[in-house]
Image (cartoon, rainbow, N blue to C red; front, side, top):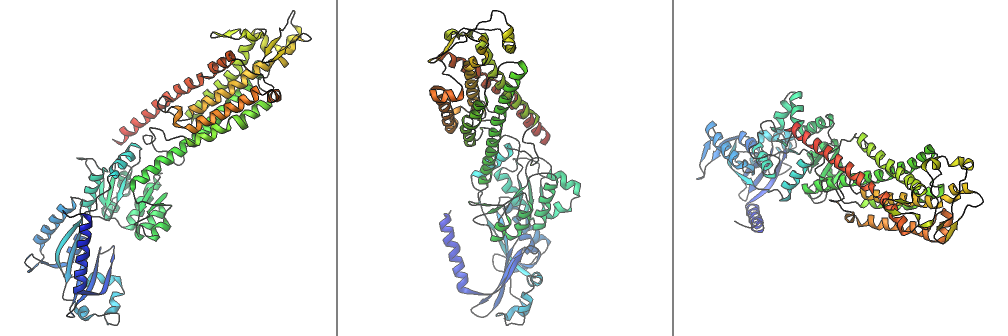
Length: 577
């Protein structure tokens, strides 16, 4: 077998041989009605002939004779037609694109045609005359052209099937050729019944409207062969009417109307015509179908990252609102002052929220069902998750405030080292009545190098003395939001599958946020501005113990989300089975 380079030189040599023997004097351009093209050529002896190539069945229809191997000419009858069609079917079923070849010597008024000044030239100006000129031809044979699909196409088709994307092939090829190629690239399974999945464009349009809708709404792949531009437009229009998002690929002038009509028209950048490129929304630079699938995965990843940003910001902000609301509802002293909340929103939250835009695609990104264009960004389940995480953020922020006032230790962590006084939770929620409490005293406590005492007014313990509890609340809010940013790496994939280091930018952003928090915490000048004090090692341990459950809660929600997605995926498979 010759290499592709050898074959190229053979073809060039063949063309050179014919160009030496014959001169082209006229062309009968291809059109979709007769599906052929012809040239009138003149030999060195001045004899004119018509050479025709085109779709085998169309060329054969206009042939009255057939030339045998020995050069003899026989009439074309039904038996001869059956032999040629059978051979054609055999070749096309092997995914060969077949061209029928024919010629004509008795050209009548075109026998002496030599250019535009000839009287018969006016007939060549009207394409409607071409079919009659290309009549009574002598069929000489057919050639099978092999254009093998790229190796990666089959894998890309499988990815589409997993992703819930239905692939339909609309082609001008013969039906057998189209079906063979679809089997080869995985649009159809081996042994699959494709009687209701493979149609010529003409046969499909002839179906009743309800039958056409049923074909287009079915499962698996579809192929429409010998399709004309109007067939492509009708298929795209019906899919859009069914609320499907339609992406259409094409390269020719005839594809332009369908490309324009589709939701996403994709023109070939290498083989595509300028008309197709102008009509398309996108131009595929490498003419590779797998690139489209990669673009779908990238688009889904971008959408997921946008949702991750929203999920992180909304759940965190719900937590801040919940903390303020719970404080007011329970009657506790305010845990966070306005400047602290402003710092968290503008500085601490910013870097992680930005870094979430660099999340890698989920490991199951192409196993999720496609979303419709009118799908809601925030569903009931998503909003429920926002609320659960947000409520825990609020409870944790207020909870550590209460723990410091009411417990000398928590889960084995000693909190009595600073010497602060303990009160009951009831007293904490009724701190405004402190002046009426008999015998209430507040012991002095230390925070870093500072000592807070309340000899003149013990009730100041709940106002000026709340600085340590407020620092714990602020630290929990910062820490819990950093951990919540890890939850936002994926909507449903566990951190055990997608660990934090899959997005190093997020780790860097978390480090920046913690660094800014440590800066205001341990620089005395800034600590005074923000109304906070340094924390001890035990107090930091408490902060992380209170904050870490946000990871566990979201892992549980992700588990439920995966179960829901799997149930939907199975339901979709059973529905389309």
